[in-house]
Image (cartoon, rainbow, N blue to C red; front, top):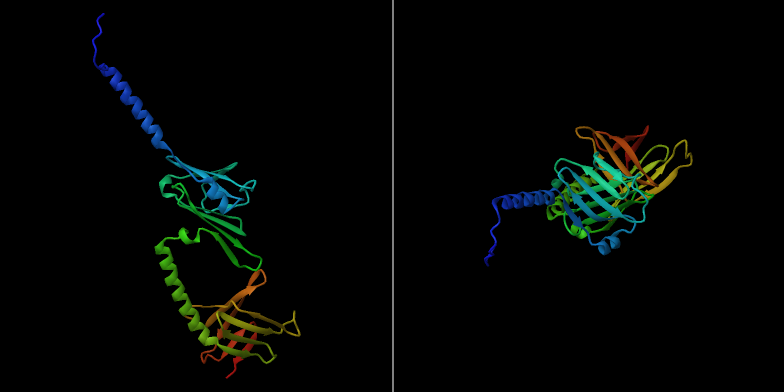
Length: 258
């Protein structure tokens, strides 16, 4: 048999087989995408719980995590389709490409993750202390979009104006015949000094709180003010007279001092 120098020409059958094989390889590669995160950076965020990689399939997402926590069984996910398999969070979803955030909470602590489909996600850890205060750690500077920051700023402005308009109504001291009183003032925040006589405290209970918030029931003369009280929130609901100088609260009538 004579062999001639030059390129070999594959047969049509070989070409077809090659095309089919390549197509199978492309389909297989296209079914999943893997995003592996920089482990040194993730550990710097939160040692007890951090993500290592995310695998995205056609109808599921698998998020792999590490940390000092043994499991996530005590955490609630903000998605009903979540399954746990050891250190893997499995989310069954029809359009996984739209699921780029993860949030889970156990009541005292909340984890929020964004930008999962990148080489480095952004994350926040939000803790609630025994007095109801919130403490945030993580990527506060990059977690929120400019649009979210601007929307939050506008909401804060609106809420501040609403709080100020309600504070003006109650500013000053309101007294009851038995000696109980509310005294509303403003420094950096709205403050409330309370002296309240009750069956539980016949000699009166006095406390001062600098974190007062007001609210109003629309189309009514009922208002509320609330504030942290130990690990709980204390709330008073009041009914204000049309003249605006008398309030009814918990069976007592308090009159505004002039």
